Image (cartoon, rainbow, N blue to C red; front, side, top):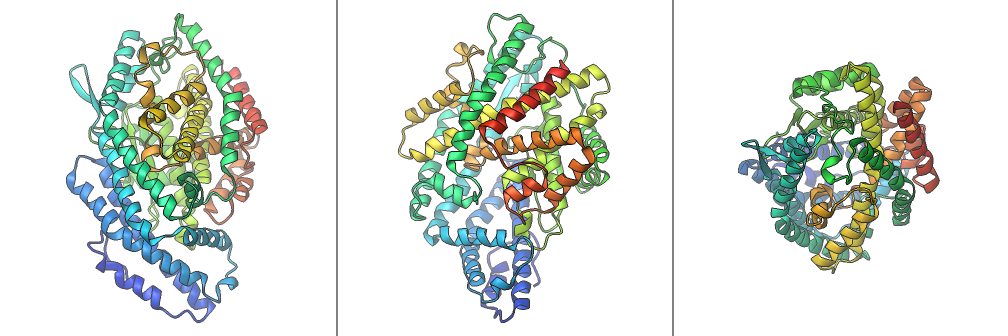
Length: 560
């Protein structure tokens, strides 16, 4: 099969390739296996084409040409792909030689294909196209948000650096400016989400699902857990994690000597020491990341070095750039792309460790037979990244030469890995409510968000001055707009990453071998099997959460 050049200019560039796959006779096991590999190569080619369009757009959301190139693929190519994917899936499932394929991972792939066929409705194609087009508007709206600081126009990420300032009035000023600017776009974001909500609900109805939540559980291939597991996770976090976070906040309040702890007091060092500065610019961040990864495994450092050499790193925050960070796997060329919004903070350094973990995962699984094997579910993909954050901590002296500063950095990280769990529970619980109540009004949505936010926020922080911002806090979470229901995975993976780090402290070499084995396997095993390969349990029960939280708390006590 000869593939055209990227980017595809029209559907006609690839239509003949799909027609040939549809019409090709498959009269033996060998012919079926060849067909599967050629279909996989075509999938990798097109996913890479879409990937570069998405990367270029998020790196420069104000560029109309890049925006149009992405929309062209979404609107003119993907509708055809959806239709042909279903035809190819059905051709494969009906082939008499299919039961003879016994290679590792094929049964996992097969159950995903069967679920795709079950969910597919041709009448949903234009709805899904419209949803994807609308979702990209979130990045444009967010990328355009800036504030004025000291006579300069800066991004939120650049402004947020001042939240670490020892000058409390400065912190308050920055916090207010960021939230006032976000508030200015609240009506636009609400309107955008209302459109998405309506379309998503229509998709679930046409797919004969009770609601969009259930549709997405199937679409995301959540074979190994149910909504009840998510609800149990929410309650376990409220019971076991929120009190720990409240204790962190009380300690912070006491150390700062404040009568009230305000939302703009959460990033400053509690002893009013200078902010941690792990690197001066993105070049230094890259070089230090390479060194840290080399210490863990030489091959890990080589992955980041190759990405630097090939221009697969865009790290600095700038106006017009989409928010957030990601590692985009590029299945045809194998080398992924890291995108983030660095402003020189400790959190940015951790983000680089996180995305670097994803990159290593992409690289380790690059030689698997089928593209589908390389496309791992988030529940294991986020283990790769979150575990790397913690494993890399053992080598953070590359960033912090002074022992006391290094201890501060590790303490910051351990507090954050627990602090994120209530936010994950909030966002996930909110999404369950949204899609189980699709006819809700904006006011009801606002009320539900406030209720959940307060449930998982504790009562230490004084939010009296910021009450007007509270109803729109969910607007800053891009997953709600762009990738619905992709968020509980962070919570599941955070628990797993703590388990891996616990093992690493006990036996580093064995743990790294297990970590590599699980990542190299891609998606050729079920999630419980992949977790077992990594030396941990696929478990987010109350007892397990309590056990791991106690371990982290003990490690924190040793750093105090």
